[in-house]
Image (cartoon, rainbow, N blue to C red; front, top):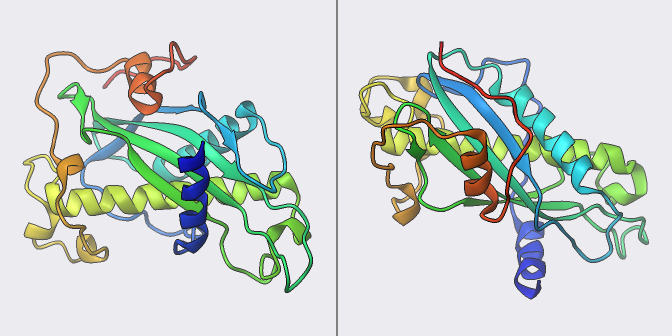
Length: 237
């Protein structure tokens, strides 16, 4: 619990991202096509000075945001994404210019290669999100936005950050390339828009396997403690 609240402090210092690009062409992700989109929240923790939001509300908001962003990709290879919502702050009204609280979200994400039947990242990737800066949030979204709007904005920001991470991994490690060659090693200018991160232990591709993961497998990897999510099966065409 203490560690999670410490992460909220880091989230509030993290850079915001602009999720308002869904009407533009999606960032390059090789041959990516979204298979399972699993969102769980078994360990959901409300941070300090926060409005209340249920697991069901977070799961619905994140599922919609992930579908809106990743459902646009039309590749021919299936990849599954598992998200575990870990903690949040939905800012409550404060004193303008003195105590203007900010909303924040912490989650873990795991990516799966359907054909290889294994995880692409060895352990869940941590994502920290803060509300986008705008005229409506300059004094803190608790003063200007409803809980539902805060949920929507944080979920959209989280989906965009997940996309940025996947682009980085594809640029550096070729996660979604048919030949496995990193996108940065190819003559694709559009794949060079995001600077790749330094390699680490989490970035090593998973070994090949004989069976594709089920939705239950994906939820287990995302949350590590979940039993059986209610997700319709997906199969490659």
